[in-house]
Image (cartoon, rainbow, N blue to C red; front, side):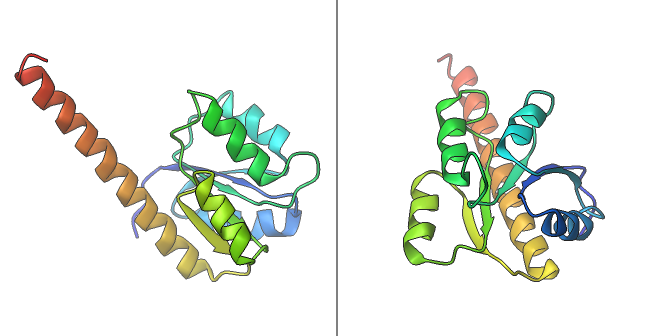
Length: 144
């Protein structure tokens, strides 16, 4: 896996898990840990991440509330969000995906598996952007 200089914000109120995941991802991505939703939105004020890994159970604002707020904001609505959480109930998974998450991963997860899933998501996002750019080029060539 090559270093892509892609930026990932990882939001989790558990400092130990923040450190573990940051250390697993850091050789491959720029990782910005955020211990709360408030810190996430502070980071988003200064950074356009390629992906957000988001816990659900957090004090103050839950991950579900965070993704709802992001999807309502034109600046943040297209940032892919992956729930990375200990909540493994099927209804939580359905809710997370319904709210717009691109994936739902339950803890604990191996570093290798997490890296592969992130890599797959990054590839899909790149292909989506390439397709959108191609569509725009075709529209311009057709004079639309």
